Image (spheres, rainbow, N blue to C red):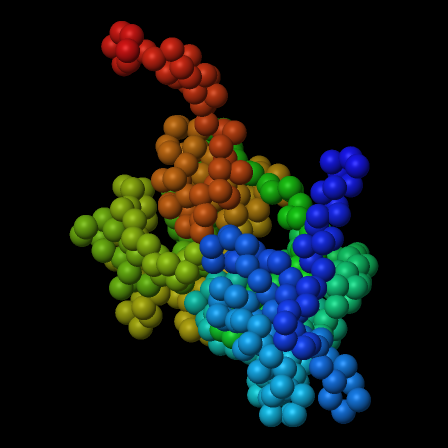
Length: 399
């Protein structure tokens, strides 16, 4: 007999139930999830109301199960004194009040108020997840239904673009579905899906925008000459700090300390409050705005938003981009953020520091976008490896 056939036979024998000395009690060989050692898993077989049940009674290591205890469980279930495993699951499901995906979303949304992406998540849920799966219980959704949902998403026509949803949108919707149910599992609200949610990989289409020295000079000139100096100041802060648009527009004077040269960015996208020292150009912009500030507003950029800050500078942004001679596809606020990161990285600033300045949740994102811009990194690493592998010290001596 070949080794492969012997191995296959051994595996099939391992999972074949073995009778014990107690009627209707069986065991199979398993592995303890706690210790990794071999253990017995006990099953019971019985009839009740003319229906045969074959159910797991417990594990040797976790439940302290023995053949005698399993026999007692079997007897109790036969007489209806203890529910079957299926009945117990149904009771637990009923006790949870049919915890549908819609109800899980309500809990998820309630506990995710600080997340900057909650608004986009809410739109994705209402547009795509609620109509298709809102009334479903995760335990009852089979793998084929999830695959069909993903396939249907990929063919859905966007309301504005009039084109099928982008792979990025499909990724975000499927990832949100997974997050909602995982949230419920972590809080014991649901047992979750019986399979992995088929989240497609994120498309590698991230744009890294930056300005040439000539373009940067032209932009600064356009900002100086623009009639809307509120918009110009907002873009100056984006250029000199790399902050996100809404982090700038929501900035409050209470979070700016000009004397110490520090500002605090609240509720960033990574759900953290972060304080940063201010460079001189930034202090100059904020000092000028402070001298001319509106006494009736707590915001650095007062406006017509619901809570009183400026919403956007769409007209001014377009005008500034055109005056600076920048490409139409250059997204000014986002582009200046990318330019800031690119300039910092190219100057040799550590990626971890750049990640903190940008407010990225994980340095991995910073690395994916900007690591290739660091000058001479691979050459320096190769030189270092050449010294280290032969045991050279900093002084050049051997070990």
